[in-house]
View 1 (cartoon, rainbow, N blue to C red):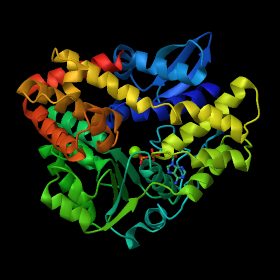
View 2: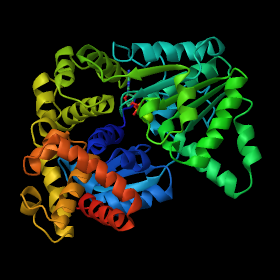
View 3: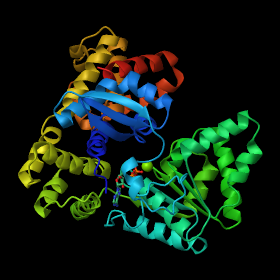
View 4: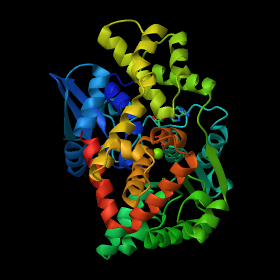
Length: 438
Ligand code: ADP
Ligand code: MG
């Protein structure tokens, strides 16, 4: 479906960037970007607004550049261009029935959602809600790790419900928060509330975003109740179970738990293979079964990464003008699987933290326990965990063979401290800036 090579390369890059930057960073700055073109060493990346363009240009340029070079194996210069809406290439082929302002990605339908043991219940519940909202579970709460299909499923519900002539409202937790704050500032709360009235289904993606934001949560609680009490369907997604969302108020938590709570787990081998088959068909690429099996065998954290690996193999085969055989797939994926990238990246963080405290990496890995060294060590653990999502065991190993429980404690302590200590927060931001723009 999507034969724009720039978009394919960019999807591969996104798969890699997603594991290199923090989740929040990814969602805020990278998630809604597209690959527009690649010509004369210029790689044009479409971004939703000038704010994001500027941020990426100033802060993540070199990381993006490095990632692109790793994929294309050529010098390339990333350029950010404002471009509203979803992937260009899709829009030409998407059903014209969707209004131009549709918030839904035409690729994220219930039909294109592949099911397996890991997500079957969530899918069944989603389909039930889209086709028969009032008779179903209310609210429907879908949770799971990043890149496992929550947004896809929510868009699928939305598009199916629209096809069933239902009035649908889709919003992310972040959007809800921003709209609420704007309405508050501009004295437009009435208008804001009315938007959420005359609808049949409310879909809220990444609800965890509103937790801890007292007034936004309260406003959401009222919206929720109004719809709930008039028997209207609500579906929310989150990265955690209701009870594990930090700082979510008790009353909202118990509302969520009162409906159907269902999870999405990482896919098993069979499901990964089925997803690869479906995605390669969508792209109009006939790839041999044994090649897809080779890709499915790689260790992948999530489905976005799985797709990224598929794109990488396709891009590699095109660039080298060779057939996509299992050998070529192994070659194309070698860099990401064999190279201890995570280790290289952790050492960058350790070095940057040490510099910031005028210490050496050896100090952080060593036995010294004075206050300054201990704080630097904990901050390094925290940043590596946040930014690379490496397992606790691995982080402990890299910082002087320390226990995973020590790492866990350090991460929790720094997370709490950063909230109340602006100096530490600034220091962490500086280190981040330095490493990510290296
Ligand atoms: P999340 O919102 O959970 O972080 P997304 O919904 O954005 O994840 O999914 C990441 C990518 O994986 C998307 O391209 C999506 O289409 C794809 N994907 C996830 N689950 C499935 C599935 N079961 N079948 C097909 N594609 C999937
Ligand atoms: Mg999502």
